[in-house]
Length: 481
Ligand code: UTP
Image (cartoon, rainbow, N blue to C red; front, side, top):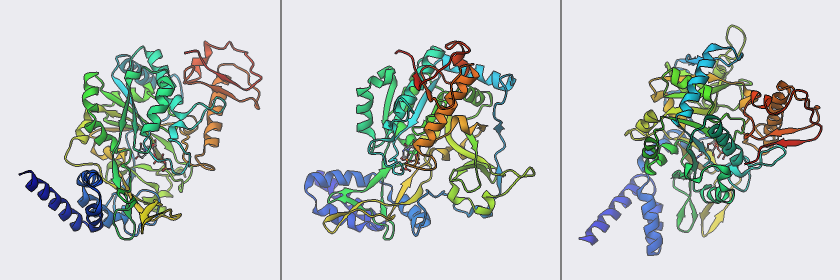
């Protein structure tokens, strides 16, 4: 009986691989020692080959860009594109009653312990070229605090301010998991209660040769894989029972942020409050694009349905359209700061219709002819799912315009645009502005860094530093644990 089951399973896998242009995998599998064979077989059996092959044919073959494609099947030019409508403009005055009400609502929700945070930190950070996971990058302009520390201290600030518990979910991938876990352990979870820091490792997807569509190998017996995108969060949460844990804790709202933007306001009560006031399932902060050609995903309506479209998929004439005032008509860049309704997100995760796959053309080292090759030019197609693809499925969405200078300066590239240097300059500028608003005098050439434990906004400093305080040397303003 057992023999029949095994041979049937192997036939099914062989059949599937043959049908989807992966006969070479079957050949390799046959030559492996038993243990390696079992391991690879298990991995291959979990892959949805039909979907990957279909997406490769539609978007991957001949792809010429290293940006991920949008899985929109019709050319965008044939669809009706409009700016998003449900938009809350930037807060410009402390007296704005709409914002005040949203703030109170968000603060109450936090105080009731109804919010968890997720940080996605599973990316490979290839553009930054940092040897460790990006979250370990020393971003503190003076302190050298890591991105992980910076984010954890923001969560600690919120826990103290609102007198609540906040589960902090860190999504890692094979590329970042072990090192991240060790880093958190070594730093005592950066002062957070260890039981409230939950690590969730996302899944992977095979990497295809861009010409043949065959899966690449990284050595004799291991196929090349890459993390399945931040949208992999949905599957990872389901597999690792996170929905259940959130329910048990009475968590209704999930605040989402990426590891690479230290200016992000984690658990921003105004953001959460607006989301609740408007009955939204997905609320996203948007920032004004600096130019039509800026490499930033756009939030817009496609046939009246809000969604995010990658910059590389927006036709130039659309990106450059101006409104009556002469400003960009499609200005709303995606900042990847979202607030999700947990019940809604779980319903998408457990539906039979997974988020679409995007493809990108990337350089991937591979094993062939008995040795490893390290291409300098893109040679492969990677697949990812993006979390923002839940937007079109939400009955109610909301967008909030933010001030880019104070909330959005991600670390993507080693130098130039979105580099650590620009990010640190933005952090120091923001902290100087807070100090100035609090009546503290800091000469132009003196850098001052303010720990997230101390302040998240100018008003936090007022009670700490008397008006007229003068700072003459570079310092880090922090507080004891
Ligand atoms: P990016 O798309 O900027 O990718 O990720 P990256 O991995 O940081 O950098 P490159 O493109 O390789 O240079 C945006 C956010 O999504 C997370 C990243 O960790 C980052 O916080 N992410 C990305 C994941 O968590 N998993 C993924 O599979 C991809």
